[in-house]
Amino acid sequence: MTYKNPLDTPAPLFTAAATTKAPLTAAPAKPAGISDGVTYYAFQSQPRLTLDINATPEYVGFAKTFDAKGPHYAAGSTLNELTLTGHWEGQLTRLDGHTRGATASDSTLDSSITKLTVSLTDTADNQFHEGDIITLNNFDGLQTFDGSKSTAGLSIDFLNGYEHGLDHLYSSQSAFLKSVTTGNGNDLLQVSTIAAPELDSVAALSNCRVKTLTVDSGAGNDQIGAHIQQADIVIKAGAGNDFVDLLFTEGVAAHNATVRGSYGHGATVTLGEGRDTLSLLTSSLVNFDGSSSAAANRSLAANHVTVTDYNAKDDQIVFGSSLFVDAAVTTVADATLKGATSLYAALQQVVQTTTGDVHAAVFHYGKDTYVFHDGSDRGQIDASDSLIQLVGTHDLTDVASTVAAGERGIGNWG
Image 1 (cartoon, rainbow, N blue to C red):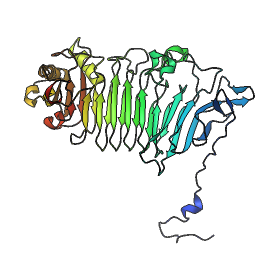
Image 2 (tube, helix red, strand yellow):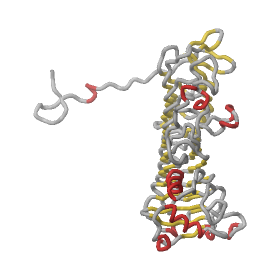
Image 3 (cartoon, helix red, strand yellow):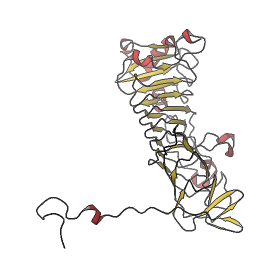
Image 4 (cartoon, rainbow, N blue to C red):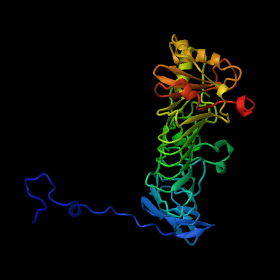
């Protein structure tokens, strides 16, 4: 045997090429047949499938077996992982995650797919960096979406949508979704912590609780829409000029991530480098409880939005459809709040400044900066209001200049 290096050197005895092998890449599955316009892939007893997205038609389904009579299912299913590979072609791919049980419905768990991986590469002829659209249906068991290796933009909606009725239009596609990650393309994502309908209709899930959802959209100019109700959402928008839109629904006890205390939930957002816009399309304090100071502070802690890296030179905050009007945003001097012993106590003084044309106030409390938006009942804190915490002590005037809180017909923008 001949060693690659002398025995008295710290260098490895063998080169990497001699001791490692290239990772195995699964060959793309071939379609088993077509039924009612849907192309089916039979997984039989396999735990995972890989599809070449450029070789698949628009409508894609899965079945344990497929024959002349069409797709066949069993009560159980072995298919846990689905991987899509390929390159950008500006196509639309509709995936039906139904893998078990004769028919899919909201009263049963229909999918055994817990992980969906999408690795698509961008192409030189994609001049406007468009994304591939992938729609999901019946992915009620999905836990993890991994698009971290995609260089092409991904447009994916993780909501239930109209097919499951208006009551579930904005609820989560999956009862178990906890992680969504994308790569450095220009991604468009819609996520939710509104409970999936299966949590109410499947007896085995009656005691399950919605989990915190983490979204990491990587680099690129991303657009993220998040519906927040039964659990918090953590968003990492990454580098690029991103848009983060937050919508809040009043939390309820059933399936709430919180066992006791306020049932409200919020978001922690890291905007990343670039010129980013954070929009609160609805009020964040939807679960505000002013029955006591203790209850108020609990609900403020639960229902507000935290931005970890706000940069007043690049970023901006928009409340609803408000306009940028200087007169609509005020600042509250530190001395005014010096005696406040809690965030609620500070807000009780701040809300006295949001009168007339003023709809928002920027102030310091503790070691952080806050933006308060007075939604409707002026002079008091209630469920129509919003609160954003900007981690760290920022210049109040600088932050105020980045906040859109003005109504039409006010100031220079009427």
